[in-house]
Image (cartoon, rainbow, N blue to C red; front, side, top):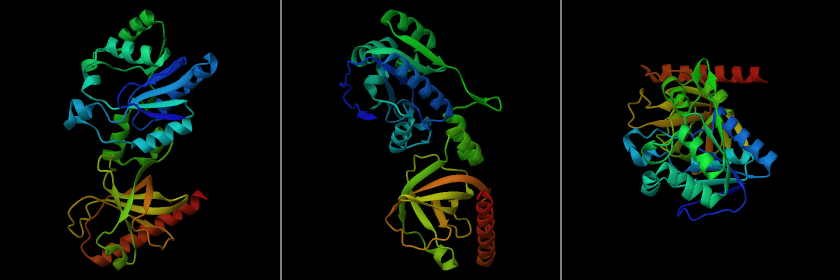
Length: 311
């Protein structure tokens, strides 16, 4: 897969292209269904498969206060698309030029003239152009005018609710339903970051933790204790991760701290990835340190029993 960061919008290709358009935050199973259709078209028509997307959510420019947190970073999206097996991935910055471009101008000046568009694959609710004024009906009209074939992917639902990035963010942030999130993403939700020094209380308590420095624009799971997998390089370990504010100690700030099971090594400065598998309980303010230590012991015992059953 070739990744193109198209900052100046001058990139062009002469090969016949099957193009998928969208924001693709999370690349959930609905997105994956769309990409699989793109690949099928590509393989049966001899065209190249290309995903055209944006570096950031358009709302970051159009309405910053309403811009949602990210499900995936750019590097995570690249890795996911790589696994899906497309030919080209184009990241375009969503800037004032794109924001002001008419729907017809976007199709004509960018997709048709620069990418030799032959097939266009979009979701059922796709909007584009200035003030999101372009819709599927307009795309049908433009496909006839410019001679490309339009393929519209219908919604995919779970329990009568349409699968979307906003639905998944709700499951992560409000409900902490990580098992359902894993099903909808086709993989576990993760937060990568660098291990930094914290207050050191975990080690004092007998349960050392890796304190994560993370991207604050990522969707943060509902406060609580989670069963997690911790990737350190190519090796993965089980962990118990606390997401929250450490109410027992009245700390200021938001913390993601992980006790890595059966692991005792110095991780300061190293990058790790935390994958969230299952929410165990709420974050609790304990009356005493002994009560906290007792609960942590119970959490770790529960985690080891759960992991043992998985094997």
